[in-house]
Image (cartoon, rainbow, N blue to C red; front, side):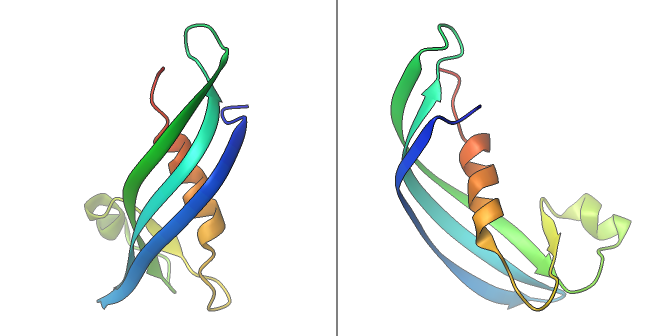
Amino acid sequence: ELLEDAKNVHVTGDFFYDEPFVTGNFTVEADVVAPSTRSLKPVEMHQKFNFTENYSEVEPTQEQLDEEDTIVTVKDDTIDLQKAVEDNVLLSLPSV
């Protein structure tokens, strides 16, 4: 409901080991259509933003959660960026 359409989504980034995490830095560019917060009519916009996530095979401690913005627990040795990209596209929507 927050996003009506997304096209031309391009994600680039790097992973690096930053003990005790694997950290990913990503740049996302996308053309999106979202409802205006005033009129609820569709508004087309181009987004370009960066986000960073930390990944860990073990549950993070409360202290780590307090110190880091995002820590994702990895299951089955697989990092799925689909949800991260979707969440950050929604989080980056401006109020238009």
